[in-house]
Length: 224
Image 1 (cartoon, rainbow, N blue to C red):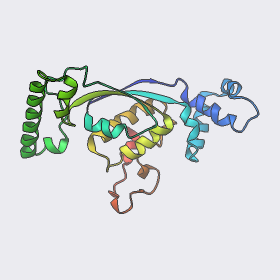
Image 2: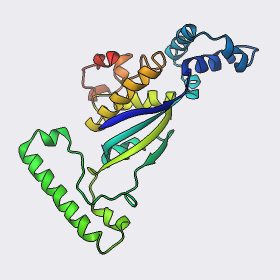
Image 3: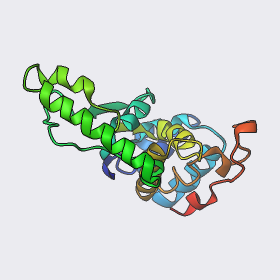
Image 4: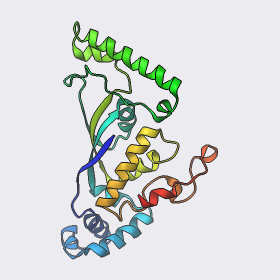
């Protein structure tokens, strides 16, 4: 798996600070932005986000490339609806050579790994045979969720906060949790104040999972 931050809003924290201040000022954001200093912007955003007013950070957006991930991951990812996606097509990209993601739990169990690899081998054997007699777009029906893919995703900062809250939790499925952690690391580099406290809910207080809570706050995520 590889995660690359392709693009993000320049001066995101100054922009969001100006947008927030415009709510309480007779002056327009265009004038406020000129007077917002980088250091003070961070302090103001920290205060606003800390109060739970996340609407102002919707003005900042971030575009990631997730590479070599499974279709299982992307099926979960696209459930986050306030986002834009562009995914590698199985109609136009050759998949004749086996390329798939093996979950860690499978890799660590010799018997499970054997069963998994046999299933992958049979799936690709069927795909290769079908691709010679029917359109590739129909042959792909036999390919598994483990099949690798690439996807580009753009989210605004508020939706990323929501995504990180759900997907960096220990209860999230391992592959998408790893992707979320890598995305959080890149987002913090780009906008350290906006994403300083982003992550699972246990970083900010009580776990909302109740009896399903793992009981182990992910405090290490504060330092990634």
